[in-house]
Length: 273
Length: 81
Image (cartoon, rainbow over all chains, first blue to last red):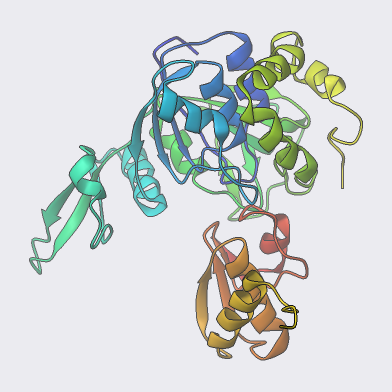
């Protein structure tokens, strides 16, 4: 990751690449454009630590818990630095990744009917259907510099298997110039069922084995969401000093994700269950 | 006046559940909508088709999902896209 990169970290509330986000914070990357459907706790942490100057997103929040307080503070008070927003709908973002993955300049959807969003977003326009004349929404393709996702397994050649709710990860990887995948485990054989969601090694730039790397989100077949942590984050993130103290103790002063896990109080550690 | 034995959230959830008839197809959000839709499915609309935005179609969760990414939705869905 380089300062100034355009980065998509995907995982549609499942398989969220937390470990990778923590490492970007440790490396103190700056001036990132962050892209994500459902920016949640990991982007709250990155925004609060000043990694991002721009956020391209659809729906932001702590899923099932409430608002993101660092995200809110950045928008309302420019703390710690100003954050520019570009907001889309989920269907729009998914279509934009698909267009990027397909090498197309834009995607078409029947969206934003009755909405003012396109007026305030330069990545959303309209196009007339050449067959029926219907005016449809045109939305600019997404082609991030880097995509980062978390998956269950990779084999030793770097083929990646994603299982369960796969969100937009495959499209995000294919749309990006480079792709980094953290996985629960590296195995000799993927043994992927036919029609499974497999990313072939030649679309993946790097694979890193990080067990528990999606904590506190879910990794289907490995662990459930750490809901106690998601709720606790609401309190930690409300106050700037409490937030900074938590980030220092658990992220900046831990060497890696395994050390981060050990730094958490009992009861919020990753469990297989 | 007697104290109300229910909250406004509970009565809204029940009112929403009553709007869902058996066999309807419903796009469901987390929170009250998810509680209402599953209440309907468990009482008067066993064949209601619940779609969560994570691509879980025909989900039949036995416990309410914490978020749209909950594995309970994926494991109980008719199909996952």
